[in-house]
Image (tube, rainbow, N blue to C red):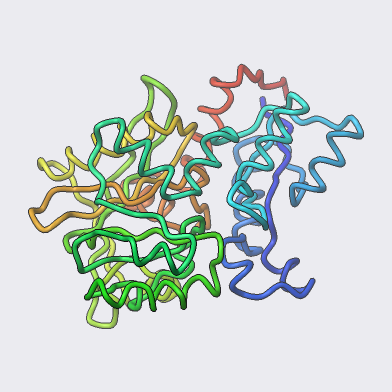
Length: 333
């Protein structure tokens, strides 16, 4: 038994070879991710075909090709709806696929929109403002210290120790600097100074469950302001990952993650990031509806491995959830 699976991705190496910068391709997958996915899905009994980027997928679907399931990890290149492009193309051609639909992908990439949905669902998130121009920064009325990051980026792009603004009067200058690299806008929120955790969620609807709660504990070499791009790149030296379980804190994190996943209608699997405020209560930061799946260094596989779920089992759970949700039937061997 198995599926014909089309693997859709954006290859970091291909875009770099085409002349794109390291910053532009920071969210894309390297060959280790693509090969890891292909080999694990094959071990699970599926026939895997590499498709590649969204434009290639669109051309092949338009030519009449189909797969039982598209396994989608493509991030897209331009615009705040870039993560929604492959799901939208799949829906245009009635092609089943993994993970979130175009609406959820669009909302969750825009951190301001995602926080509004989460806030309106009655779930905790830090007070925030959206800045599109330097003039907008002059109108922000939030209590310092503040945290500033790109509005519609992932993989901690633009997040560094300089994201902390200790005085409100320094905010316009910091925003002017960041807007040069991230003109789509910035999210400004009141700083959450406490513990930071990420929670993996697997499954759909009433079957959704928290896979694990993983805390990032900073070493003496880390940037402690947040899970910055540098911390992620040098995680072996800068981050000590620890599972949290069996206490009220872990239960609170799991409830918040499941609430966020439901409010934003994530599917199959996602990863929810949160941090504690000064009173020690967790607040939503952001959600990744297309969670990183590098077999070794991505957060979801790391926490799965620590929880006793190996990489093949993790991918099997994701595919299994998508198959049930989409009504896909496996074919006889």
